[in-house]
Image 1 (cartoon, rainbow, N blue to C red):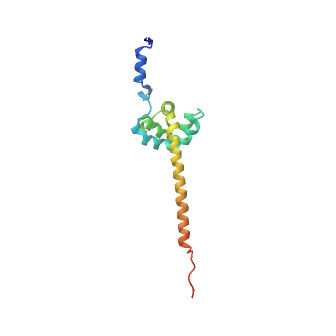
Image 2 (image 1 turned 90 degrees about the vertical axis):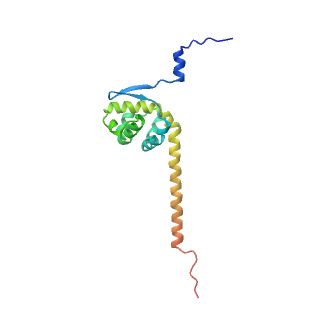
Image 3 (image 1 turned 135 degrees about the horizontal axis):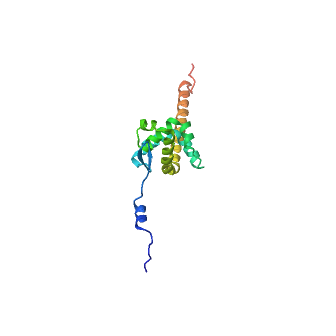
Length: 157
């Protein structure tokens, strides 16, 4: 017994080969798509300074891109340049509205990945590093105290 599929062939094709959304910014058509895995190191470096802002606001769905750009201008524009795969000079020449629009679109397609996978691991790594630094500092302090304060008194005749 066969069933009829009334789905147009074009819909099936879009499931297999997703179409890429594009927007026009500064007269240029730009793809809005998740970043590729090869860009991960650059993206992680760019997102690190504002990770806490993205993490805190993404969960409440109240991420205000304009305020993000105003409060963290340099870090936001660096992230925008990386996500858009454009030189920072190109990003610096954008109008504020265009920068906010482009960053909003790029974060929208990438934010789930950041919030669910990257940021928790990044924050965990920072916590682990912080713990290791504290442990090493305590160990060095203890070694320094032991070296400067001999534990056995000098023998007297």
